[in-house]
Length: 262
Ligand code: 13P
Image (cartoon, rainbow, N blue to C red):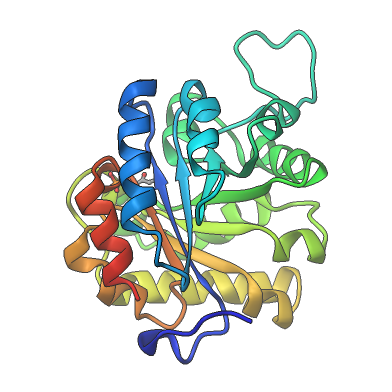
């Protein structure tokens, strides 16, 4: 049974809040933060809590959170299982550190590493094959929004990045709607913009998969989430959590986001 909290009485989906630390934190800094989070967030049962440190900190962080309500996520993985792929990390290597989630297709990887929807879909299938839950990121740029192409872009990304997933795999997949123009800019999407994009994404999921899947999939919002805007965003009917960047790097701000969301 999922715990229910007053502002989420109308949702069957449990909130999931993840911290994407990006390329930040040495092992010592990571341990400092995660020890604090473990203490501060110990009473939280209403929300699935995930931390996504850089690869280099996964091993040590995994030991600290073993007996806690924090779960571990990675920020990327290879589509391949092993082999001559210099610099890449395979799903089985993540599993060694009890990693449960993996962020795929973050807009920074789409932009800087030129990751395509097709590649992201192959990675999502590889993640499921290893029983890792993918957090698949989608979102439009400012130019796309301003030219009225938001829904077209989201539909293309949803169809492309989830291609080939079974309905069972889709139910175990998390989506993160991160408008590129809201990432690290301090510009949050309005609650109306976020809700409308999330509802649209769910409609596309119903078309590709079915209504049940669309109702079950959790869709996080990401882009300048802070303690001050978390509650309003999380109270939207189709917003099921947050993927937090900058504000996940400090104990106080991340804890407050979680506490304000329940
Ligand atoms: P910010 O919260 O720093 O805007 O980053 C969002 C993000 O990209 C999370 O994946």
